[in-house]
Amino acid sequence: MAEKIQKIIEEISNLTVLELNELVKALEEKFGVQAISFQAPAQAKVEEKTEAAGVVDIVLVESGPNKLNVIKVIREINPNLSLKDAKDIVDNPPQKVAEKVEKKKAEELKQKFESAGAKVELK
Image 1 (cartoon, rainbow, N blue to C red):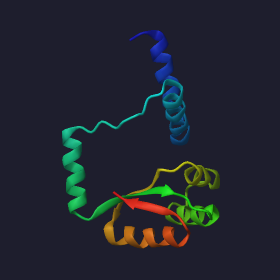
Image 2: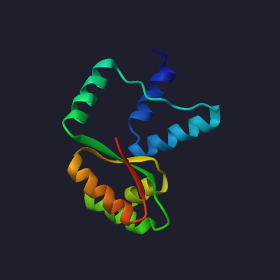
Image 3: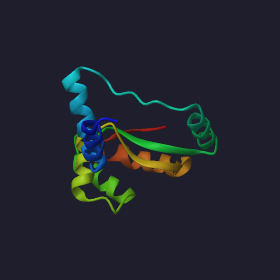
């Protein structure tokens, strides 16, 4: 692999998730493309099993007008998340806010988000 590419990969590996998200958006805008997710067949089978077991991911689709309340819900779900990171999630939907949550608990969290004025999807 070329040294130039190796350096780029090294720099990317040092970015935070939010910085990676910004990078992807900037590259999409710069080159007029859209990033798509590739899913290997084995991974698809694992996801099918987790869905069958009642486990879902919670994705923030729209923050709504009262972002502060949405930030509070996000920090309630993940108290280790900094205020800045929670704000970045709210400011840049769609974002995954929780992974592999039991369906019943996910429905409760969805209600909290909707009460805060946000729109979420369970996937």
